[in-house]
Length: 309
Image (tube, rainbow, N blue to C red; front, side):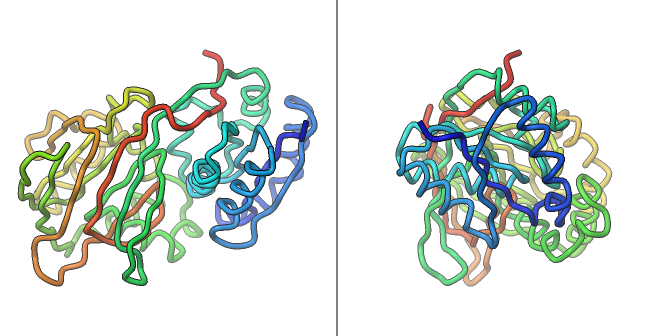
């Protein structure tokens, strides 16, 4: 049987993973055991490697990096269509998905969780949308997809803010830079095939897991194995109010706000109402394209190694 494979993104955490890898590898060998290793060089490599290795019979593949790396590896496994299990060795900027799974950040503890943890089947989202080239594209997501301000915040974040701050402060800084002057898009949305409703939104989130944006508890009630998305909509509120109430999103107490709505759904279809207005879409912390888009839940679609708690 093939050894577990660790797919390492050395560029994650603004390049810090490259420096950390010798220590991470040592902790993994000490607390997990022998493994094989592959390094990514560019975006898309983790997805390609994961798919190829899963098809070749690799039964356990571990993503070492941030949310983007984890999402790429998950996409590769899902495209392969095998029962290969996903593991996570955290080394990124945001670390949102690992929070829902309660994966420890410390390398030795994460390695023990990979060794002693249990296999859990989790739900996955499937998104169809318009990519940057103007063609229809498809992508799976394990954490959160969102459109509105979220896509623009992520785009700004990728321009280098993380090098200045890192982690939660980077997301907060990018949000502050974006919110003032952000033009609220008007969108038409249908949940579970019901009649369209029209909304002016700051952000519209289709959540499979609980956290996004560097620790924001956007969907505090989300469960990874309930067969449902948590739909969380931050409506049209003044920019100053968005900033003042952003702390409630980090705490997960925002669902009680008048301008925030919450629903459950198995599918969602969304389009921009204003002619020619592009509404950015981000998936698992990466800007991937724009509306129109559709989202569908795939129950129990992915095997993930979780801590035994």
